[in-house]
Image 1 (cartoon, helix red, strand yellow):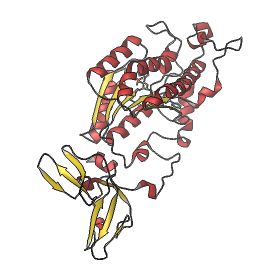
Image 2: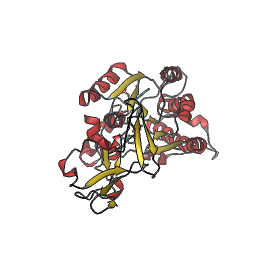
Image 3: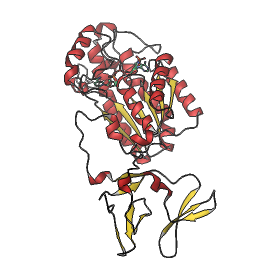
Image 4: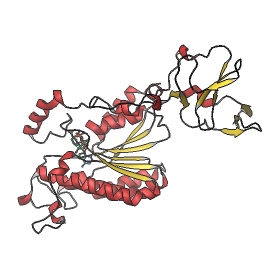
Amino acid sequence: MAALKYAGLDDTDSEDELPPGWEERTTKDGWVYYANHDDMKTQWEHPKTGKKRRCAGDLPYGWEQETDDKGQVFYVDHINKRTTYFDPRQAFTVEDMQQKPKRYDSNTTALDILQGRDLSDRVVVITGANSGIGFETARSFALHGAHVILACRNKTRAGEAVGAIQQEWHKAQVEAMILDLASLRSVKEFAEAFKAKNLALHILVCNAAVCWEPWKLTEDGLESTFQICHLGHFYLVQCLQDVLRGSAPARVVMVSSESHRFTDLAGSCGKVDLALLSPPKKDYWSMLAYNRAKLCNVLFSNELHRRLSPSGVCCNAVHPGNLMYSSIHRNWWLMTLLFNLARPFTKSML
Ligand SMILES: NC(=O)c1ccc[n+]([C@@H]2O[C@H](COP(=O)([O-])OP(=O)(O)OC[C@H]3O[C@@H](n4cnc5c(N)ncnc54)[C@H](OP(=O)(O)O)[C@@H]3O)[C@@H](O)[C@H]2O)c1
């Protein structure tokens, strides 16, 4: 039951057993409170542990919440045709996180961030999820119960990533789909195949990237770093926009980089020059192409948020950390050296 474990739902510790005379109840919105029949009083804190708890997730299929004449909440199990005052979700309560606010720092992992979340009704698509940050993100979502789609360009590497997550938890809902961001045709085909599944889309993580690649043109005639890091994702979001809106509340996360600060899009006359985005070979510098694509991701995220947030789709750009050891450095030996030297001092994936 890995997902339950990671979602903080496996707490069956006997310290939670109530002393005689106490009863556990829930409010309409799922908060647990404790009633003492001897003293005729109620309280939010568990009489033994002092912890506040709330129910996790929705009611099981077939159950409904009702209120009786005295205003007390009860539950109807339509499948087995019975009623009870016991909230079936009490089998899966989680500690009230607000009681002890969490502090996140450079040692915090994706699993730490999601701890206590039940994501079993969420659908997540992550591009470039077969390695590095994308893989760790996919793994963490999947171990919290989400249905995760790894959108990757290489079938074998994607299959291995799916296998690794399922080995950790055999019930993980993970699958791979082919998406090559260097091809607008592939992006379109991915979006069509995804839509054919008739799934919602609650979280789209635009994570895939390449860096320090030699100049080359994609099949669409665009410089490849720009297309993979930015334009392919831009097109993907356009293709999936209706699904995102229909799945609201939903979110798009554009994985950017702090290096977006070290460039701008202004040409020699000081105005935005779109020709800089897909330069010819003679004007190409791989690092600059990467930085510009990442700047586009930030600008795109801001504008997307402005346009989609009224429909319940929020968009954020994120910088995941500097020199995190992944395979991003593989195209240039100097970067491989730098990443290796920095490795003991920088954030790790796990
Ligand atoms: N690591 C860092 O220090 C750092 C710092 C700042 C920002 N970031 C950002 O974090 C994100 C993840 O990077 P990472 O460090 O985890 O690097 P990574 O391990 O190299 O992951 C990049 C992923 O993108 C995929 N990808 C490359 N080209 C693709 C294409 N044409 N179509 C679809 N997928 C493609 C790769 O697939 P293949 O395995 O098939 O190549 C890989 O799965 C990137 O957006 C990067 O810019 C990383």
